[in-house]
Image 1 (cartoon, one colour):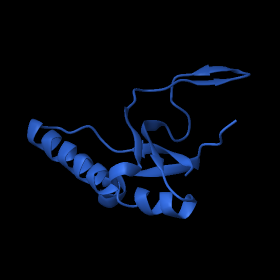
Image 2 (tube, one colour; image 1 turned 90 degrees about the vertical axis):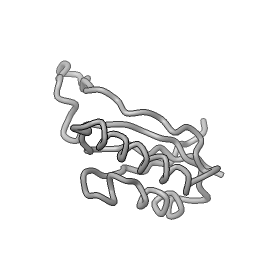
Image 3 (spheres, helix red, strand yellow; image 1 turned 60 degrees about the horizontal axis):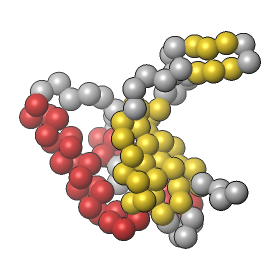
Length: 104
C-alpha cells in the first residue's frame, strides 16, 4: 500500500494546560481511529524558512507547515478520508495537505 504525507497547515497553540490536554486527547483519539494506517505519527514543527534561488525568507511561505504525519492507505481517496477526521479540519483551525510518497 502506498504511503501519504499529511502536511498540517494552521492550528493554534493551546492557551491553557487544560486546553492543551484536550487538544492532545483529540489527536490521540484521531490517531486511534486511524490505527495501523499510521506509519509515522510525526510531530509539530517550528517556523520554517523558505529557500529560493533569490534568497531565504523567514516567513514560512504562503501557507507554512505546522506539522506532519505519514500514513498508509490504499489510494488517494482513502488517504483523504483519513485526513477528514483530523482535529484541525474538524474544528476549522487548519487543513491537511495530502500527498502520495513515490518510491524511487
